[in-house]
Length: 292
Image (cartoon, rainbow, N blue to C red):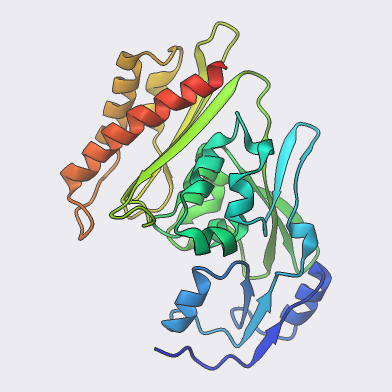
């Protein structure tokens, strides 16, 4: 199918220019284009019918990765391939690095961006799951000049739905550097190597001075509801050292509280088995990385 007619294409050099262009269009008529790996498919299928495309490729201020005052800030236009090799993500945020390494195929990883992924929030996507597990913060600026920071728990509302409004631009995604030892990991299983996850799991573990878990965050995807927390699994890991019994209890909690659907990709039982296999490995790796 050919896309509906697109009347305008712009490639501004600043965020102010983006807002100036948006001001000439009604809400919903303009589309902010990041990497375009999801939105262009939606345009081709006429799921999206923008009259104006605003390409963000020239916004260099959205392409940086930096640590400021104990906070890791990743610009919205940073590509997956850049995340996959950035040393700033080592140790504490390796789960995001894992996810970026296994998003789609090589083309997607070289064009897709973290900002595009979290704003699109596809039903089965790696990056929103990792951002949710790592307690990310979305920094938004509106056309009125207002800025706000939205926690991942409040940002991801459901498949293709977020707290970002039509008048907002995502500036960066930030993560607070833990004051104690911490580690994270992500794994997915797809029908083929580069496919979307049938099941994807990310775990983030913080340890106290005794080497016991003082905070855990687990997020899963592939269940049809998009990235979602698995709080029952998190609670089972508190005060544990990552021993197999505690991890098994966490996996039991996840399976008891997460609704795994049956569809063309997998049966419900198969998904639960994937949660058990992937989940055990991911949690184990997160504990190991935290202890180093």
